[in-house]
Amino acid sequence: MNGADTAWIIVATALVLFMTLPGLALFYGGLVRARNVLSVFMQCFSVACLMSVLWLAVGYSIAFGDGNAFWGGLGKSFLNGIDSETVSGSIPEVLFFAFQMTFAIITPALIVGAYVERIGYGFVLAFSGLWMLIVYAPVAHWIWGGGLLAGAEWSLFADGVNDFAGGIVVHQTAGLAALVIAYFLGPRSDKSKPPHNPGMVMIGAAMLWVGWFGFNGGSQLAADGTAAMALTVTHISAATASLTWAAWERFRYGKASLVGMVTGTIAGLASITPASGSVGPVEALFIGAVAGILCQEMCGVVKNRMNLDDTLDVFAVHGIGGMFGILMLAVFGHASWTAQVGGLIVVGTWTVVVTTIIVLVVRAVLPIRADREDEITGLDLTAHGERAYDMTS
Image (cartoon, rainbow, N blue to C red; front, side, top):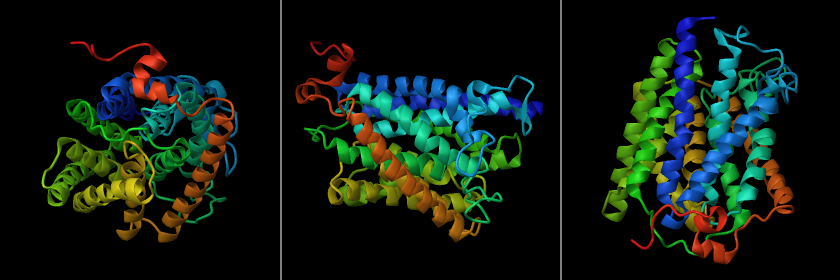
C-alpha cells in the first residue's frame, strides 16, 4: 500500500463524485425549462444514491470480481472478504471500490440528458438500476476487470482494448443507451424553448471540467507521471474543443453562444477520456480541435436526420466523443485497430440490444412517459410537488 497513491485516489474519488453532484445536475438542470429543473436534480441525485447501494450489493463484484471472461461473479458482493487492509495494486481495495463506484454513478446519470422533461420518475429508477448492473458492470469487467476485451488469456483480441478512463465503458454505453431510450420515449411535446439558465449550465460545465481531472488522472490509480500527463492532456483537449465549438458555431450561425462553448468543453473532455493515459499534449490538441466540430455536427444529425429527441445531446457529445477518442488511439499508434474497432462493435451491440430489452421490460411494468398534462405543467410540480422558482414574482 502506497501512501501517495492512496491520497491521490481519495481526492480523485471526491472529484468524480463532484462531477455528478452537483456538476452534471447543474449542467443538465440549466439546459431544461424552469418548470423541470428540480426533476433533473432529483433524477441525478436519485441515480447517484441508487447506484451507490447497487454497486455495494453486486455491481462491484460483477465488474471486478474473480469470475470469468463475461462477468466477475458474486464473490465480492457487499465487499465480502474485503477490509481496510485489503490491497488492490498499491491502494486499499475499498478505495478502489469507492473510486469505481463514482464511475458507476455518473454513467447512468449521463443518460438523464436524453429523457429530461417527459419521463416517469419510477421508470428512471428501475431502468437506471437494471442498466448499470446488466450493461455497465459487465462491460467494465470486459475491459477493466480482466474480461472479454482486456487482453487476458480469454480475450477476443490479443492486444486488448485500450480504454484508459472510459471512452467505451462510460461514454459509448451511455450515448447509445440515450439513443435507444429517446427512440422509445418519443419527442417532447414542445421542443422550442431555449435553456432556462445558461449561467447554471456554465457553472455545471466548469465543475465537470475540474472533476474530470480526477476522472482521467485518477484512472492511473497512482500518483505518478502518467497521472500528471493525463490531467494535462485532459485540460488541453477541453480548452481546444471549447474554442473550436465556439468558432464553428460563429461560422455556421453568426454568433458563438455560452451554452455552445461549454458544450464544446464536455465534447473535448469525453473525447480525450480513453486516450488520456497514452497521448501527449499535441495529440490532445488535435483531438480537442476535431471534437469541437465533430460533436457539434452530430447534434444536428441526431435531431434532424435521425429525428430523435436526445434532448441534451448525450449521444452526439458523449457517445461520439468517446468513440472518436477510442479510434484516435489507433490513429496515433497507441492501440491496434482490430482491438479498438472490435471493442466498439462488441460493446455497441451489447449495449443497444440489452438496453432495448430493459426498456421493454420496465415499461411493461411502469409508465415510461409522463402524462401530457404533467409534461405541460412541468415535472417539478407534478412528480415532486415543488417548484424551483416563485412563478408569481
